Amino acid sequence: MHYLDANATEPLRPEARDAIAAALAVTGNPSSVHGAGRAARRIMEDARESVAARFGGRAPDLVFTSGGTEADALAIHALGAGRRVIAGATEHDAVRAAAPGAAILPVDRRGVADLDALAALLATGPPALVCLMLANNETGVLQPVAEAAALCRRHGARLHVDAVQAAGRMALDFAALGADAMAISSHKLGGPAGIGALLLAPDVSPIAPLIAGGGQERGRRGGTPAVAAIAGFAAAADAAGDASALAPLRDAAEAAAVACGALVCGADAPRLPNTTCLALPGVRADAQVIALDLAGVAVSAGAACSSGKVAASHVLQAMGLGPLAGEAIRVSLPWRAAWADVEAFADAYRKTAAALRCARRDTPGRQTPGRQAG
Ligand code: PLP
Image (cartoon, rainbow, N blue to C red; front, side, top):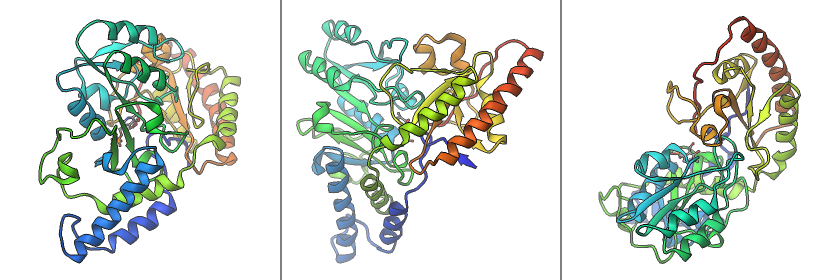
């Protein structure tokens, strides 16, 4: 199997596997005062230092969570209290579900947020919390987050950045971004799933927890911490440089698909180096995913983190791509991708496009696509 679905989850890095195994050998609750507890706490606090430093934050301002979804929800809960929420039109469901009444910040055809629209939204109404993702999970399109942060400061608004897909794939410095909060997730950078973090600006703490429990994480997130997962997260974050070496492979995969008639969604925007979103006009996305899977290539379609959910991609719809929103697949190269994966994809795509185009001539009409994880 050629695994090209890294934006759903990255393969576990060996450094993370080793760190998890070492931490699992330590028995102790980090809240306990005895030596065993202190040993567990040391693993956790070393990891906190290392993850915070890796992404331009301060250790005391980093809250470990169960992943990106919880980090987004915590940010919106804590920073959005008493504020109206403005969310980018292409935000992940983790943000959309946590801010159901949010005003929507439109994007252009490239998928890039309209900063004039943001300025207009901020100019009227009570203080806001703006949610703007750094890199989109479906298209890889990058948002002008630093510019948005400057606008937010000017208008007394707060900014939460979902950097789940960006962390480990591009240079990322929380302090330099000028945001108030930033969500990251371990399994998108080669660590285990089920662990992530929210980085807070120094002046934002203390925050109200979503889960109060026993007051762990300085009262910001209750529950006994997952020490082994935290250790694996830190090791993966350390090992993940950026994904720039994947750009030539991504470009080659893209070129092969374009030669078969595919369109690249968000092609003219700055994008993550490992991601491409390829629409094949007139061919359902789920049919493409299934055909590629049968050919031994794992990619995904549409959007959404739950299995069996069927709906068109809100990201591609927001970009004004109309029916193409149901005809696009996402190819996202993992950290360990090799040229053999790209060659396998190109070969499988050529056969898939040819076969499905013939099938489409037999059964015309467009239908709703399946959706993807992550
Ligand atoms: N934000 C983005 C942009 C994502 O792509 C995802 C997961 O796919 C999440 C948040 C949720 O992260 P997690 O799977 O760690 O809950």
